[in-house]
Amino acid sequence: MDDTAQVACPYCFENVEVYIDPETQGELVQDCDVCCRPWVLHVSRGADGSLVVYASRAQ
Image (cartoon, rainbow, N blue to C red; front, side, top):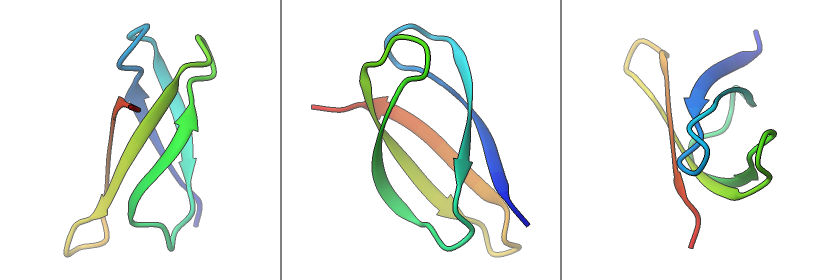
């Protein structure tokens, strides 16, 4: 099953849906689809397999 998450861009504050590969955990860099500025996506999985994703500004 594909995992998607809604995250708010830390620059333009638009909500963007992102696809997260089911095997992915940790951090990855992605550009905002709206303003094109870089984020760091923080991806973790709960004990029940639930997806937790948040974005912060890339340095």
